[in-house]
Amino acid sequence: MDMEKDIVIIGGGPGGYTAAIRAAQLGAKVLLVEAESLGGTCLNKGCIPTKALYQNARLIHELERAAEFGIRPDGFTIDVAEMMQRKQKIVDRLKEGIAQLIRLNSIELLYGKACLLSRNTVRVTGPEGGAIEIKANNIIIAAGSVPAKPPIPGMDLPGVITSDEILSIDRIPDTLAILGGGVIGIELAGIFSALGSKVTVLEFLPRILANMDGEISKKLALSLKKKGIGIETDAKVTRISADAGSLSLLTEGKNGESVFSADAVLVSTGRVPRTEGLGLEAAGIAYDRKGVKVDETYQTNVPGIYAVGDVIGGLMLAHAAAEEGIAAVDHIMGHRGHGSGDAVPACVFTFPEIAAVGLSEEEAKEKGIDYCSSKFLFGANGKALTVGEEEGFVKVLAETRTKRIIGVHIMGPHASDLIHEAVLAVEKKMTADELAGVVHAHPTLSEAFMEAVLGIDNKAIHMMPKKPERRV
Image 1 (cartoon, rainbow, N blue to C red):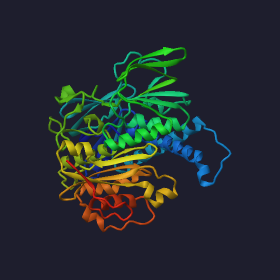
Image 2 (cartoon, rainbow, N blue to C red):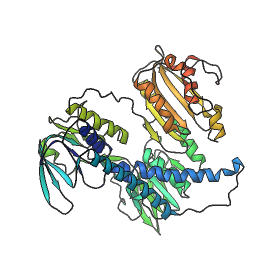
Image 3 (tube, helix red, strand yellow):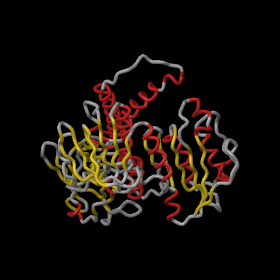
């Protein structure tokens, strides 16, 4: 191995391996160091395993509703072992795909734990204990994150697990309590409810999905409750204890103390940057509990050392990490063709799906933006009715004077796919007028987005005529 590299990248998740490939494309000599498995949390313990199980849950929903379509199945059973095997096959296939891309781009890959010794020296300790030192002109830290565990008594009891462990569970718990109503907790609530668990979500804040648009959060909470999922907000868990073969959770809330019982407790209170053991102090890199500090080019306070992805905190999304990795490499290599990447979509795989880009109504109000909104219901969309998924809506926010699209929020079928037209609109600062002449195929779900956009100027065809509400 050449012991001197143009770029050493610490972490083989979406931020790290994407940066490595981009660097190789631009002609750099690259070393990628990974401590565990290529693909990081997203591929091994997050996005992909969750979505594999989400598809199982979706099929169960469809089977349970089959009679609405004139189909009456005789019944079905759930084989947890086969579900997990399918999930793992998908993960393994994607990991091999990444490994092949690494080989084909002539990127050196080294498994081990990386630690910074100085501004341009990285020590890598292999799985069997041997260590080597590599010199690097530039270093990109993409070490990811780990599940956060709040200091609640009883967190170490058997049956109290994180999202990492629940994705490899060997049986479906009869009752499941979920600490945290963020994206991970809400997604897993929907999945395990469909698989047969009686699920209760305990959220410390006044509403679930606190970072999403308030109307989306409220409507989804009502939808989940109708599906049998318990949603308890303003609920602070103060203690977990073992009680006659189950777990008891003591909470404090607006109405005093309450006790909830469950066979298993999922701790889903977010993730924290993985900063320990990286040698950040030795290299003089500024960081705190929120993550490594970087500038707009993702460079740390130490010239030549960059950080991307979950390790810098913020969005903690795989696609954001990948975009940051590309941006960091482009800056290192003097390439100026990289876009702004300001419009980052967020998706929540629930029933129905949630997706958003740009400003929420709450954020627009905080910024003092004079804006108007328009909303189109999927219940008025032909495709949504034919597929039997009419719940939800598309909401578009625009500046009142310019009609520039500043935010789009979707709750409904295939929201995670529909959002990307909105991403383009927000990223390119398009106006409702500019979008008005774009023809959308019929019957498709995407027509709902166009109707919502047309509603900004009261031009929607399949919407009751009214002026959009103006708010400041």
